[in-house]
Length: 400
Image 1: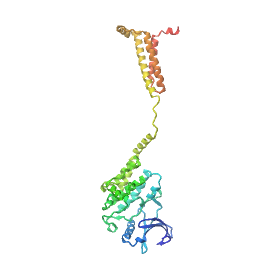
Image 2 (image 1 turned 30 degrees about the vertical axis):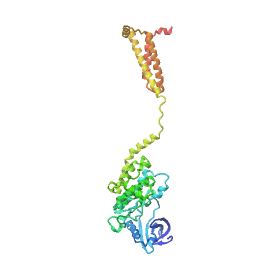
Image 3 (image 1 turned 135 degrees about the horizontal axis):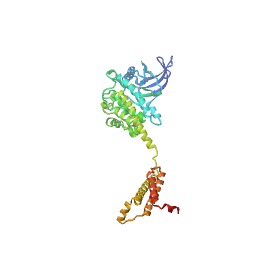
Image 4 (image 1 turned 120 degrees about the vertical axis):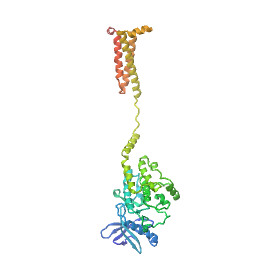
């Protein structure tokens, strides 16, 4: 095929191979525009069902003109084969993109890419076209994270029997991305694509499809029909909790419980983007708290407690000595009471009490000072204790 000319396009090189045909890079001989030329394999060209499917792809693509869908330029039906001349996109299939990554795509980037994919499918569904084979290998990622959906080979134009090439009771699609109704070979509508888009989004975030550990088709079919997807949070962490809720909605078993169209899917992603503004900050704060080293308790905390206790004790002893000293020296109330009780406390006992109170208050003050605690009671205790001592002490004796 290399070097062959179709209409005004010359085939340059092989760029892809598939089950039904190969894809070649072509170039317009006059203006140099590059195109992708899909060629039905010669050994299949005589099979009427496959020829019909190939023509179906051309007919479906002719109905679609959207920046997120690969465009069709021309279709050729010749004796030597069938050809689709399509828009050439320099990009990479999602499947190859995920294989090339050394770490998962960020959640925000994956959501932005997915919204573009959903926009393309929303357009196709509004034109009554159901893709029926949604999977990462049928979506290209171009520069600036633009997307291009391709391969409408088994797509169905709803309400037009000309485009319904599969019989009721026949499975269509790729196993891993099938919806429950596809597995059951039931009638499909656009909500089947939504399920497959949910699985594709799962893989875009996680880097693998939900049933990667399974090798039996029967086991996969059973999981699709009976069990929900493996929670994304189990494999990727709690940061994916909210986006996982969106995927859960898209992949509900019952079509009535899913998003009813791609616009609802997009709206959920937009709502999920605005909702986490506070929650993301909270999560980030929690993460920072967890990451931060646990503060070591102040080594002086016990000192502070003991200092406060001693300061208060010294204050109360000084207060007792001060009041008692004032009363016994000038009022005599307590002195008379003590005589009646048969207890005599003289000035030296009062001085001793005040002295002890001052010492305790000073020790408490020193301890509190080391921890920058409140020193008021300790200081007052020292002052009151000193006053109590002065009231009873023979000051002349100090100077003898």
